[in-house]
Length: 445
Image 1 (tube, one colour):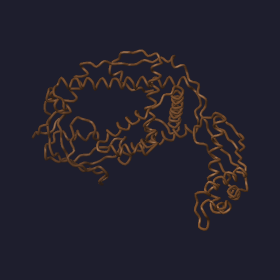
Image 2 (cartoon, one colour):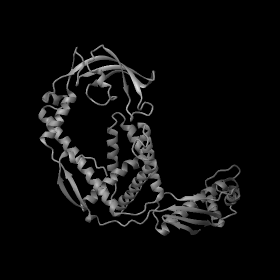
Image 3 (tube, helix red, strand yellow):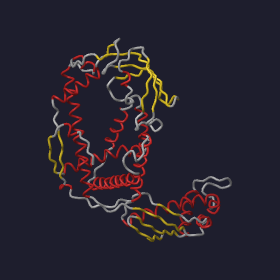
Image 4 (cartoon, one colour):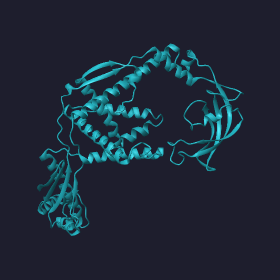
């Protein structure tokens, strides 16, 4: 086997591989000799079938297997001899000429082809002990607990039927039919829909038209769909005919033992404890998220290199497909987002490049420090996914264990978190006490 590098540009290399016909023929004869002891052909005793006869029957298929094995062997040799780490699978380019292929299959010509590889660049890891991070922490306050209890009580409050017209805060159960340009539209008809006057979540201005309505009353009015609605209806005027099935006034907000029992707890004291623990978990998750984002930002700053173009293109294609899907669902254009497609492409390509670069750095850290996701940890993650779909646990379990890509997608964030934990232990981390609002403030960057 002869391997010659014919081109190199950045992370891309091209090689010409030549496997002599005589070597291929020897491998084919070895395979046929192995087959000889197993095959049973009429007129021949087991193990006595002449190689020449076997070659007439199985020569082409044996040669195809030999060529496939030779290509794998050559690819492995290229990677091993040069210490390459491949970014993507090698691209093998076989001769396009039909006569040349037939000559190789027939054992009359050498196997000559080119193989293109794209490699991961060498990554020099930074001194992680020099990383300085700030962990934002926020105490759980009594005011925060009271606010959470108030929210629970409001959501759990009872509503009582009233004969008077609906006011702000009342719940009106309606049935409606809507038209656009005099024609019904998809989703424009519904029965028994509860709407709380003064709340958001419906078409702007719709709930306002229900002020003063009484049970059994029917009204017809016009509203305009917002510009960020679905593309088919965005910005269009619509006419609705609405019938109030019931009008109910909210009962008092009660924060007591009965509220706790509604949530399966025995007393208000227990509910307070549960709320405190929930808020503590929320704070811990938010603190962890901000700390990890800060860590990734520093990793990105400390490791500047050009990632493999093919990996960037794959990541960008995935990101861009999501962007286009979201725009289509919202009925928006790039102009609606105060940008252009060209600017958006450049922005998301930078995001894709950052993701790939950080992914390679994290993989390198994990490999150099023997950080792995154990089978037990992966199984626990699968079980957590299964618990989210009660009654379908077996289907979820089977799905992950029969779909390597899905399992890999589940493993990736676990691995990233383990690497992050490892780095946070090495870094210099200081704590900063902040208010809850600052802890949950979105990081625009």
